[in-house]
Image 1: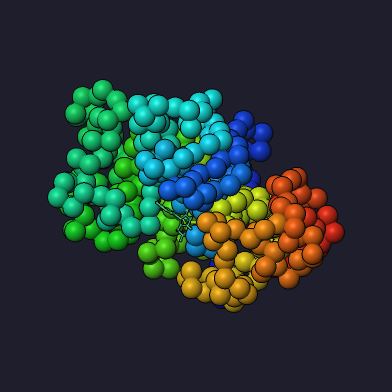
Image 2: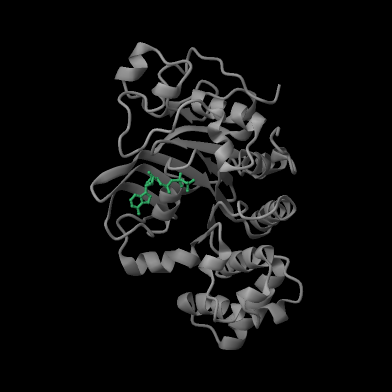
Amino acid sequence: MAIARLGSHEDARDSSCSSSPSLLEVDDLEVSIGGTQLLSEVSLTMRAGELVGLVGESGSGKTLTGLSLLGLLPPTAAVTGRIWFEGVDLIAADQSRLRDVRGRAISMIFQEPRASLHPARPLGKQITDVIHAHEQVPAADARRRAVDMLGMVGLPDPRRVMDSYIHELSGGMCQRAMIAMALVCGPRLLVADEPTTALDVTIQAQMIALLRRLASELDLSVLLITHNLGVVVDLCSRIVTMYCGQVVNDDSTSQLLDEPQHPYPSALLRASDISFDSPDDWSGISGAPASPARPPRGCRFHPRCPHAQERCAENAPPLEPGRHGGRTRCLRSDELTLQGVSR
Ligand SMILES: Nc1ncnc2c1ncn2[C@@H]1O[C@H](COP(=O)(O)OP(=O)(O)OP(=O)(O)O)[C@@H](O)[C@H]1O
């Protein structure tokens, strides 16, 4: 399947607010769990209102990066580096500060909404619980805001949905309810982890249209974590690629499609031309992904890289400004001209 263009990433690029100040700056984030280093030198910046995709094969560290932003890593995780969000370092913040940030300033939604929603509590109560956790407002006001939010995410008859339980709703409706719950306190950043993977293609397209509309109407930044490059290309103005626990490339969507600056996203794009519908189809790239627990020496991608030279096996490349903007982690980035998919 060629990359599906459900809408136009040009639209997304136009709304990327290039002059906006940084909302989020992740700098040199390192995460170890149980003594095993799983994220290394992760850095990432997002501006207010920006839609950024975070892609990479399974196990590359996308979810751990997302969880780090909300302080939701397991208690055994050791975290270093900086995560600046609206002037606060979230790594240095205490639990009470993090609880306040979570849901109010940064929210996260997951692939399986039914796992995130309580089966035996009416949806409306679950949404007003979030409001009451962050704000002291009268119950009637909280209920009105919850109804408004359910309407905003496109659920018909929001008053009825307030009194519904998740088993009474379809998968797509549950996903919308979860988005309503995530956005009801007006966060500035939504981390969406595979929000469309469990949905069929038609509902997937509706969900992408919904995220695009909400981002624009609410001035919301979205970090979209996914395997589905078609979805990212459609929604996001910039695409950050992770491999083996590191960010290896950070490019505008148009640059990535025209001429990727790193062999890994280039290979992903070519694999996506075969099929990008399911994680299993990533076998379009030769070799198995390296584990961040046992990273190869030198460039972590070199054992699978068709452009690797001897020095790539010896020297670990830093993440540096790319020849065409963005940032890339490749010793040969100055000399390689890689093929995109849009010509
Ligand atoms: N709680 C944990 N304890 C130990 N290792 C973990 C834990 N969570 C994740 N890992 C490991 O960290 C690495 C990165 O995992 P992560 O879930 O962030 O990858 P991902 O890119 O989101 O993959 P997927 O697309 O499959 O969700 C993997 O090797 C994974 O096995």
